[in-house]
Amino acid sequence: MTFEARQAHGREFWDSRFSEAGYAYGEEPNDFLRSTCRQSAVGDALSLCEGEGRNAVYLARLGFRVTAVDFSEVGLAKARALAEKQGVAITTLVADLADFDLGNARWDLVVSIFAQPPSPVRQRLYRQLHQALRPQGRLVLESKVDVNATAADRYPGVRILCGEIAPLTISLAQEQERSLNEGNYHIGVQRTAQILACKS
Image 1 (cartoon, helix red, strand yellow):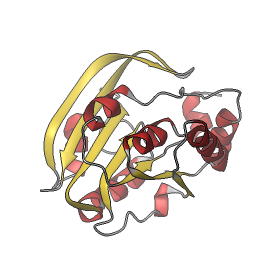
Image 2: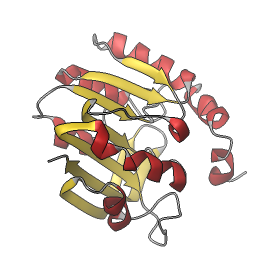
Image 3: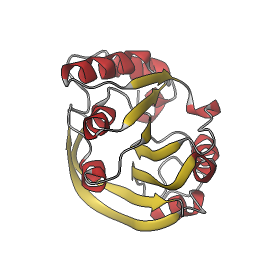
C-alpha cells in the first residue's frame, strides 16, 4: 500500500504511526518555526495537526498559551506527556479540520507545520485565518510541495498558498529544497513552502 493510499485512512493511519515507540517526528520543534517565533510577543497560539506535540511544547516554553489540535488522540496523549516532561502546560483538542472552526479574533499566532489536509479542507481552513487572528496576529506555515501541484492538490506551491491565505500580509514566502532532520519520517531533502504572514 502506498503512502497516499494509507493517508486515505486518516485517523487510523496516524494513530498507528503515533503508537510507535518514540516520537515519529522527534521532540524538537520545526526549525522554521523556531527561527520565526524565538523573539515573538507571546499570546494565544493554535497549532494545527500538531501530532505528538513538538511544536506546541516549544511554543509553551516560550510562554504562549497553546492549543494543539489533531484528530489523533494517540498523538495528543504523547503531546501531553512531552509537555509534562518539559514542565509546561498545553491544551489539546481532538478535532477534524474538515469541520473545525478557528473562531473570531481568537489567536495571536496560528501554526501550520506540515499540516496538509486535502485541498477542500485546506482552502476552507485558510479562508478563516484573517477572521480568526487578532490584529497583528501571525501565521507560520511550512508544507511539503509537489512542483506539479495545482490548487486542487494536497501539496501546492507557495504562490497558490499565498493566494489561499489572503488577505493576510505576507512578510516571507519562499519555496526551496531543504534538508529535513525531524525524527524518523522527515529525513533528507524535501521541497517545501515557507510562509510568514500577519493580519494588519
